[in-house]
Length: 143
Image (cartoon, rainbow, N blue to C red; front, side):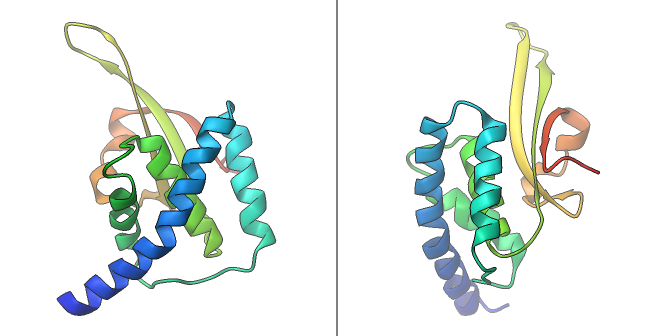
């Protein structure tokens, strides 16, 4: 894909992702239960007809990351926004959250959230999450 076309596509994705990212930030403050929030996102996405804003799914995490670049860098917000955008397009992604033991001076847990499509993490930076993190939540659950 040419640079000009990629910038145009990324711009359209950003325009679609920005309002969704703001809505997800508000929803995260209102909902205390992540499963309840995911069910709400699912219900709203199903009620609306599917829309396609772009063709290259690998660029979705880039646009969502730009929306969260300044205010909130949390993986939960980014993953929720990505999940909501993909559901809105009529796709069936999985929101996944996991924990890993931290082997440093201050031992504890490290948490991470990501989105999978067809069983694979959508964001290339999340390729190794399955080996590092123990899954604690998957929405929708595997059948």
